[in-house]
Image 1 (cartoon, rainbow, N blue to C red):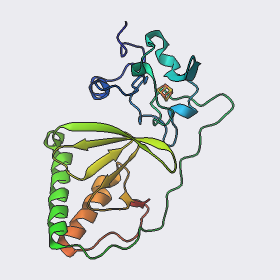
Image 2 (tube, rainbow, N blue to C red):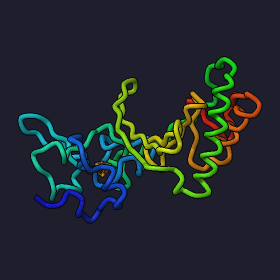
Image 3 (cartoon, rainbow, N blue to C red):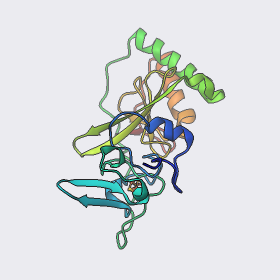
Length: 216
Ligand code: SF4
């Protein structure tokens, strides 16, 4: 059998490491979540549905490496990879609209929550200054209902509560700021100040701004 990952559309070494291991579908042409937001393998021109005794879903770009095993399948709910292509005649969906409504108000934070938020802000500032301080990275895939979709979550050992959803093109959240999501560029501009406001003044974010937190 050929090496699943030795293809023209090869994964980067770190993507390869993250997808190795386990028995889940991992026949992707590149890391899920690196493609256009809102798209999935299910909406990609390269998805192939092989009808045998059952229907197997494979990425056409990986055809040379297909086996009868689950290891070369893809999930139709997996977020699109960078090789995603619109099905001919069907333009890519517009990016989902950002909500502007704030999440439900939460009770005032406890002293312990404020302490954890302060530590989280300091850890994030340190990680931005020196990415080596983030600690070991781990990635997990979860299947969600309503709407049915798959999400890839990335976490770092020294940044407890901080989560990246669906790769670099996705969004970020923090357990100290429930209900709010942030784009990559908003971590420094909005997420960290929100954590500091929570730690120093006990203030939670209450409204989305143009450059700031996005409520879900
Ligand atoms: S998004 Fe398309 S190219 Fe990428 S793994 Fe899925 S089916 Fe293959």
